[in-house]
Each structure stands twice: as C-alpha cells, then as structure tokens.
Image (cartoon, rainbow, N blue to C red; front, side, top):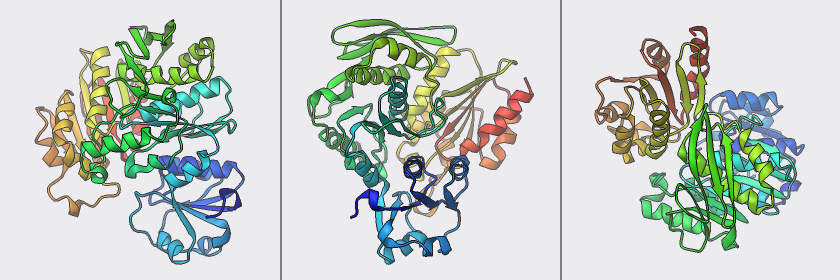
Length: 453
C-alpha cells in the first residue's frame, strides 16, 4: 500500500457515518480531494457538502468515479456497508480499498494517540479529552463519534503531536489503533452479532488494553478486569483517580477530584449524571498526566457544553423540558432515566424511543423493556434496521418489544407519525432517545415547544 500522503483523492463509501465524516474532514482539511457516497442525506452530509465535499446519494458509477485513477485514489469504507455497486466497482478495478479503522490507525501511528474505548461513555469521554486539550492549547487532532457543542464538529486540527480518537469496538475496529494512552469506560455486552457473547467482547477489550505500552498510561474504570496492570478511576469510591462530594446547585454539578497525591475541590460543570462525572474524572486524570495545571482544567471543565444528542436539554418558559439523547443500549437508557428521575422526581415523563438494529433489540429485549418501563408514557418507534434486514429476524418487531413493557400508556408508532402523536400528549418532560434517524424529530419538536411557551 502507498503512503497516505501519496494519495490525492479519497472516496468514502458511507461518508455520512459519524466516524467516516471525521476522516473525510481530516483529508479535506489536508488539501486532498474528498468525495463519497451515502444512502441518505442528513444534517451531517449537508454540513460536509457545505464545507466543499462532493457527495452522491445514488449507487451509480458516474463520471466522477470513472475519472478517478487507482494510482492516486484511496477508497475508504465502513463495515456497515454490506453490498454496493460503487464498492464493487472499486474492488473489481483494483483500487486500494481500506476499512475506516485501518486508515484511522495509519493516521494516528505517528502521534501520541489517546484512544477512548468502551461500550458506553466513549463519545463523551473522548470529546471531553479533546475539549480539555483544546483549552490547554496542546498540539492535537481529534476524531470523535459525536458532534462537540463547543467546536461544532467531530474533527478538529490543532497540531499533530497528540491524537484523540474514539476507539470503536464494533467489528473489532479498535485493534487497528496504536494507542499510547487509553481509557476503557465499560465492557458491557453489545454487538453480539459480531462477538457472540459477553466473554468474547471482554476478550476484545483485553486485546485492546494489551496494545498500550505503559501500565501507567492505561486508565480503566474501577471494577473492570482487564488482564493487566492499569490505573483505576471511579466516582464515590476510592481509586487511583476518583471524584466525590457531588452536589447540585442552580443546575450546576459540583465535585471534588482526587489524584494519588492531592485533592482539588469544587470542579463545576453543567453536564448532569453521575456517569458523566465519571467520564470527567478520567479525562482530568489523563490531562493531569500530560502536565496540564488544574487552574486551566477547572476553567475548561466549566465551559464544556457537551455533545449533540448526549443529554441535550432545553427548558421552556412554560416549564416543559425537552431532552434528546443517543442512548441505544439498556445500560445507557438507564443512565439517562436515572438522571431525569434524580433531578425531576415529580415530573411526568414521556419517552419516544427508536430501537437500533433487530439483533440488539432481540439480544437485550428484557433490558430495554425494564428501562423503558421507568417512563410514565411510551411511544415506541419502529426498529431502525441500519445494516440489517427484517427478513433475517422474523418476529423481532417493536410490537413484540412493546408487549414486554410494563406500562399502561404505551404504543408503537412510525417515525412519520411520531411528531403528531407527541403533540397530542400531556407531559412535563419529553425524552427522545435512540441512535437511528429519530434525530429528525429534534428540530420540529424544538420549534413547536418554542412557539408554545
């Protein structure tokens, strides 16, 4: 394979994916010609096109593809793409075709790579690490799995000494990385279509941990057995790095942070949830080990605005609250529900949830039912299939899942009917949650609630 620098053209098959788009932005910022395909036009693809990236939405071999030469073109694809004429064309014509994870690994090989892995929490943690690096003006680039509310992107270039990457366990992608520093936030069962069972996903994380050369540059949430020495972090229990004394005042969270040698009191930020303080704890631990002073870190934590679709909260004059979140696993939904019930115990909660993947719905049906039953009323959207086909999962439907939910007020809805149904409901708090295209409800809901204040 050629050195990445020798390629002038980069074609992305599935460019609208959150991880793919960060790579596309990287090569575009490097002055390369970037183009690609995705099956649907979204906010993210629209943003990419506004930045000057050429995207098509039909699986057609057009002049733009035919004009590309294999000697100076690298084709990058995501494993979510199973069958596509465009991809077949590049393979048949012997273009260099690489998975996204492999290319990300090549980019970060020559940097001090900070890789954040985990079945939950990796997007918030990696985005927070990147934010702290930016506020400390470290020479870094980042490749994130979410859109930072601070710099309005999933990619940022501020130098090349460090790279901050979200290490994706799907398809064992994270094993392509060369992490110098790493975080493991969680190893819960997920992606069982790839791993088969919980023991194999835990083995995958142990393999990832083994890539880190220095025991003191591997940070693992306390309680996770990773098969090698590491530093631990936690909330409300003693670890190598931990936070405690959590309290809420005027919608702000206060906490104290402990290193092995000192305690720094009264960090303040606006991101709710004990799990998010846990994410902040390990981000602070890494930046402290990179030599950043705590005065800088306190200011940076205080102005962190979060990530789009990670507990994005709006409060309206009429008292209603709208929260949008990307959670798509029972553990993640429980974390969101716990935060809502902790801070608003008496509020009437309406949840609109879109399951993501037939396989995940099947594998964690009882967990989904238990977590969703914590709401007062539920609108359950049709399952978002992503890379899967309904015909391969007979009987796995939202109606099947709904029967397991122990609520009186519950119903299934199509995405197209969901907004109308939401407007007819009585609620204090509305939560839209899921990893598919439920995000298309966000703007209409915000506009409607703003007009009805």
